[in-house]
Image (cartoon, rainbow, N blue to C red; front, side, top):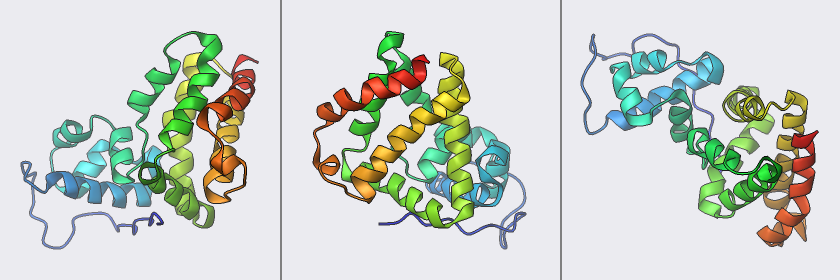
Length: 205
């Protein structure tokens, strides 16, 4: 299964769209997600806004916030990603600083252990490897909403945080896309024991 990059919208009002803002309907959530895919494809993650997505969907911005809380929430839902930074980051940062590497490794490996949950993420990665538009969306989302936020909270230099991210990204590539053995079939706890000190070393400096 691959994640398709949404077609770029030309912007503006689509044919047949009525002027003004309409209230929510049974299809509003899906229409917002469809609009979000077009906006993210055209503008990328950083330049997309809740107001812009609402304008594309012809709804009030409050409805977008009602369904998704934040731009990150819209992106996660639109691309069917298995992680939401608003819930993931507090979870991995809660607890002793010297164990944050272990929590990050365990979270990533547990999150991707379920094939149905990880496939949208891997599909997006596969697409990003051959499509610069998709690569830009992925890069901006993870840099801004995940890596940058964790680095700022932990006061870790960006290079070290990106190195930790690259470590886990490489593990996922090896485990699920290249399917190297014995990495592909290794037990989660075995990998946590192996990888946690490495990731912790990046974060501790």
